[in-house]
Length: 335
Image (cartoon, rainbow, N blue to C red; front, side, top):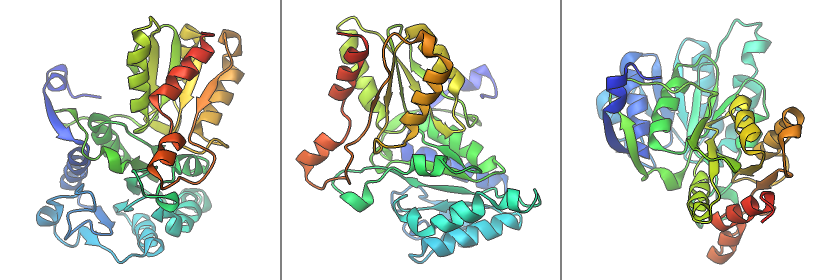
């Protein structure tokens, strides 16, 4: 949602980490109830430099370094949200959010209902998700489907700087808890970002590439494999339509269904274990609402059904690749 067309045409190039920093800083200038708290967010400018310069601008009362205690500072964030603040809680990685998951699931997500609507919890939990190279089993996990499974939480996973900034600003303004999941391997990615104020509403997917032959739905950094596959397939005369979910809860079913009704084929690409994930939910929604439009069974592409390996060769096999997407597309095309 842009302020006007002229602003929308004025673009600048930012790294993903810079888009995150801009979103937080702009919102903190607008609203002094917003603060950022987490490990190394202040003196070190953020573990991935996503809060660079913010301590100097906003001071130590609003950019707060914490001990290594996710359960503790998650709880502090929830409590302060109940008392009129709008905290941004950064996890160095969402693998570490498991230490604070009781506060997220049992307090942040449920407090509005349990209080009979007396308390909103306007809080954002943000940080990187999924694999980031050779970080092995306990530091390479994707928990999007875990958090999306819980009523009361919104879950956002942007794939580029423009979406990251617009979605994060909307998440910070939202009156309910938002899980905002990034990627260590995307913080250095560069992309065009509109100048001036803009917001991207939560719960709205975007068609990133138009195509008539097959729909590919994805989100987060793994969507790059879909883009590469689509380029390769185009050389063979197969045109893929790529949808970036951007928000996995609430999910934009309508955009997916409209595309499937046009292409009649669906591939879902997700960097997550194959059992009970976002791709599974998409598959159910499409077969229940658009079954008669399908010309082939839906194919979903996920990681291997094992903890993430450390070995680079095993990790390459474990992660979905552009070749996996090409094979899936040809399968639903019966080629």
